[in-house]
Amino acid sequence: MRARGLDVVSSRWATVLASDSHIRYCRSCLSEGYQSIFCQIDGLLECPIHREPLYSVCHACGAPTARYALTYLSMAVPFKCPLCQSFYGDRPFSILAGNHSSQDNSYFEPYAALFRWLLQIGSPLVSWPTLRDWHWGDDRALLQGERSRAIFCILTRLHPIEVKGSLAVDHSRIALHVHRVPPAEVSVIALPNSDDSGNERVRRTHLFRSLRRHLMRSLLRRHRRCVAGALERLTINWDSLEMYPTSEICPLAFGFLLWRHHFEEPDLLREPHRGLCLRTSVLNWPGQTGVTTKAWGSFASMSFAACFQVAIEWATESAALADLDEKAREVRFRELVGMFRVKLSPRILAWPSLVTCIRLADEACREQVLAVVRMHSRPDGNENCCAQWTSLGFLAK
Image (tube, rainbow, N blue to C red; front, side):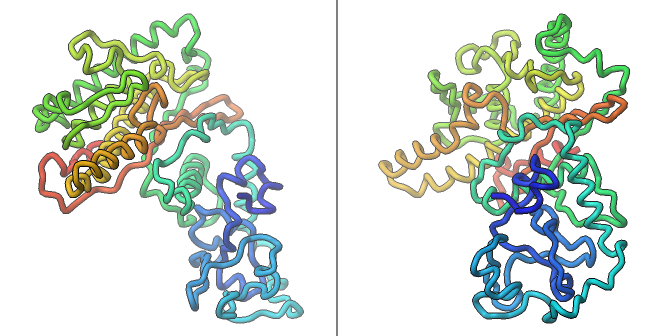
């Protein structure tokens, strides 16, 4: 979908940040006979002028607004609810009165700032090559515009909108690590196929080994038996490399082993005691562009957070299997494996889809390389020590 008009400002980001499925409006703006195309940006939670919430439903009856398009519903009764005929604004306005025409240009400066911001992030200096593959695993969240809101949140944190005061943006679901590379170091970052790539792979392997040891000592010290016992409860489809539990398993142990399964060669269940050898795909992350060793370390740690989230989702979805009979349980289990197969196999997806890399560069050639992951909300109400999942506080640091 595309919010018509924003593509003129930034064709690159219009379809990503905005939606035309429903008209979004500020009640005070409509009372003055004005509605901005920028209100269609899903991540914008409030009107930049009045700092009031933006709505996509009727305040009187709750019916959704019409599409942001030239349709019968949107034009027959402009800015009125097609169901109850209530005006969306605080009060009806007269087109002849021109309520907003008396305002000077400074009144609309917040929207002008949004216009400039869209032009700036539309430049080649902002590169997000894996944006298409970066997504949540939940289609319902995608339908609700959560992905668009998350992308807007990330871009505004990297490149703030120059407006007086701050705009309301939901930052609660995003963990963001920013690595600034000084101009003198940009030219010496090892690319995947460069002469120094071998040394960089060695550094990344040592870093991964240290991270794995740190997780075992600090995070998994109370779950060592869970990790040891988890190997007996896991199976791997060697054709697709999907690794999944065949019985109830500690989510923390499953997430840890799934993370290792994505990163390490050879596979855990066949040769668990061989020396460490990382998969080429993760050693070369993020692909054809080079990043610093520190940025790669953020990618590795955030990948563990993403795999842990997959383990939580699996535990949540599989909890109902115990209430089914044997035949229904087998059918539902196969459905679960099919639903999670992309997240469970490093052959299908080299690294978790929740992790991505963004590159920013300014005129001085300073670059920012970022690893991004959505953090799961803290679960509660479970007294099982293996299901309390206390690692989220550690990962957020």
